[in-house]
Amino acid sequence: MSASLPGHINSGPLAAITMPVIAIFMLSAGTAHAQFPFWPRYTFWPGHHATSNHKHRHAPPNSESAGNARPKDFPKGPLQIIVSITDQRVSLFDNGTLIARSSVSTGIQGHPTPLGVFSVIDKQRWHRSNIYSAAPMPYMQRITWSGIALHAGVVPGHPASHGCIRLKNDFAARLWHLTKRGARVIIAHNDVQPVEITNPHLFKPKAVSSSPEFQTGIAAAAATRGLPVSNAETPETTSLQIPGSAAARGAPNKIVPISVFVSRKLSKLFVRRGFAPLFDVPVRVENPEQPLGTHVFTAMEFQNEGAAIRWTVVSIPEDFPRMSEGATKEREAPAKQPLPSAPLPDKANAALDRIEIPPDTVERISELLTPASSLIISDNGFSGETGKDTDFIVVTH
Image 1 (cartoon, rainbow, N blue to C red):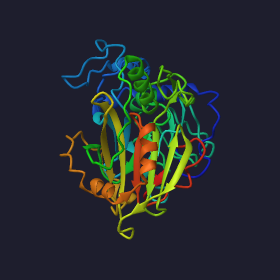
Image 2 (image 1 turned 90 degrees about the vertical axis):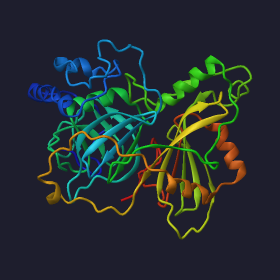
Image 3 (image 1 turned 120 degrees about the horizontal axis):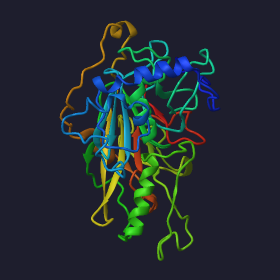
Image 4 (image 1 turned 90 degrees about the horizontal axis):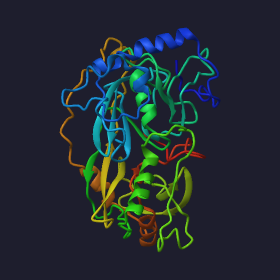
């Protein structure tokens, strides 16, 4: 059982697992595909081999089978993990496109799962709670240092955890092998999704080299929010040095996506890169007494040979009533449903239009901008959870 209390996730690796736990895990893992199919595009998920008895029998008719998939298929862009408390469901987006969906079990009343903007800050394949009788938490992906994580566990179709997000075993294994530290996690009341957005106030990249070497380096940089690694607990960066580039002129030669956070509450802009703070500056917010909302903008890929970049945004609605345990006790796991029509990002555009950033700051951010970089706008300040070895953590409820 997971918990939202500080310290329920310890930092050491799991020393051993008993055979009964392994047996239970393997038996339950084989059922995950039946109800919530995984788009089997990726053959690099080692979890497939551990639970391959079903051999993707439940894959959608047009899906490429795992056996025929190309071994070098990788995510096309940044990964976003979006959890809906109301639907008790997790959705995985690659480059702004839905690629997987499954049911979850979140926190009960009294131990709710926090809402807001997070990222994966630590990963352990085998982990045990240090509070709840050493309860197993396989494929743990930590999103706060105080004890909130995604991990495999019992998913009864309603909230049942002590704050963590329980995943079906097979989904948890596949997700763990796909993500790496920095992967964005958004937790909202309802089923939000990324939509494309264009706005003159969004950051634009400085002119970049179109050489294959540069583009390879940029693709690898974007992977810090998505591609699989064998040692997922080590921060990944990519070295790149091209004659004439900033790196060759003595600037840092590691390309790492940046995170920008604008807080209406603090009237400040903050920048982090590689989980480390870079700088912060005051900003002006028009009509500061009026809410901006919370919006997560993500840079997807360069366009026009590096002269532009494609953005998506996830807007997190506010003031939705939280479900009580009693209201969801008898609720069954949601059936697979088509995505709702994507709304126009009117509120996100309105928020961007009200923020005035100093021109020299815009210039500085533009020079650092790469795919997988993000801009978070919120009425709130960042959480006290934001600190060493974290991205910005913004709790909205």
